[in-house]
Image (cartoon, rainbow, N blue to C red):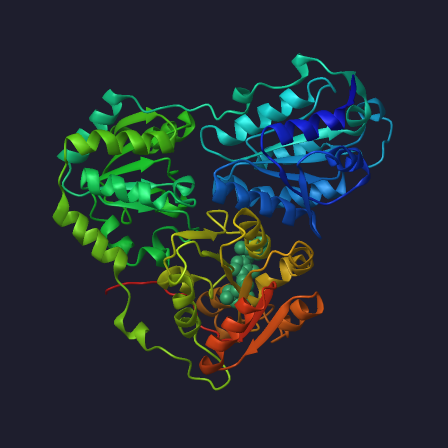
Length: 544
Ligand SMILES: Cc1ncc(C[n+]2csc(CCOP(=O)(O)OP(=O)(O)O)c2C)c(N)n1
Ligand SMILES: [Mg+2]
């Protein structure tokens, strides 16, 4: 039997169970749309290619499986590449499949001919152009394996049009074995685990810092298990605000007292202020467990003999191994653990009653207070936070088990696609996205995608008619009389949702918010609750 290259790709995805494909059509990939017929592939097609990648990103984070995005060549690919820069530091496993000019036309001025793999390389773990029709299945499996292995992340594979159309004989060699999709796990050895636990036991004030992949859905319980077993505080770090992440309370105050930092798949980078004094004590020692030797070498270069132990291992199996070995030999640093817990849990008492001073507007905390009971009544609820100042407030005071934020990239704009993909990944879960008004503009057309695919969620906009995060920088750095270029309008984004077939609510008082949220949820439609808020800076929490 003869098969098109496109059939090989579609059937390989189907066989691997990677059946949800976030996509936007285009000449180069129409053979794949055709080949999807008769398979289990579900095409969720979007309104701008970056949204497809953001959706695959959220899918990967939530399900722990590889997200799949499929876009056209040339401009479609170029649009999608920007979103890889969120997924890469977010440590999110996804494969971006892009159509590509036919190999036979390259160098001859082919339609949308572009160095696509080179374009994706800086923001992907790997990127290449498929080599032949007969290897499309095995190359796809290889892409998935790379995305899922080590530090997870995005991989790009360009699919030349002529390879998708070429027919080849069906033969066992064209189909990848299930094991070819990986992931290939690199475990932490018993002896390494014991050495690291001994170092933790010998320290007075040890900390384990976990990177973004360990913050993905469902993994927080595994972090808590290590904390209990080893008696060491385990801190999850995935925010670009780093040690000032409001989710971490006054963590920055205790970090400087630590005498041993164990980086568990956590990059030493700007989020940790590079581990420099005074943020980290000048005598503090380090242990690094990382899938990448480059990350260990970075700490060795910067900290010299203060790096006392290291191991090449993937974060998840290392976390499991440390927990299992610690259960045997309890390390016991409980007073310190309690200090750290108290610091992380601290919120200014005044927050409990903080309210807006201006009429017709809410304080961000008033918005959070109305969201809290909605998250609390469903353990499966998913919170998405995105944008500048407003979204830091829910990150500070709302603690659902399942949460997606933009991640260390600090890129804004992904939350509407994130929310839609979250609902696609779990068709029962209430999904709430809390985002700024500026951020809403990036992908508001995706309300159409959500309506078409019947994927309800509630977007709660903190509308301060400003790119406030940047406005706040201007106030601090240049003064109020030099603040410009960051103004927006108090626009009726709720009507955008309504116009596209969703549900819209405008809220200008705290009393209106609860009922508006309930109506939004009950509508069963993608909904936008447009809340007029006071323009306040994000919290930076200190006990003084
Ligand atoms: C893709 C991208 N573009 C620009 C920025 C810079 N930036 C960070 S926060 C922010 C303002 C966000 O405004 P809004 O969504 O209204 O949230 P607010 O800060 O007003 O609460 C901007 C422009 C960024 N981080 N990422
Ligand atoms: Mg704003």
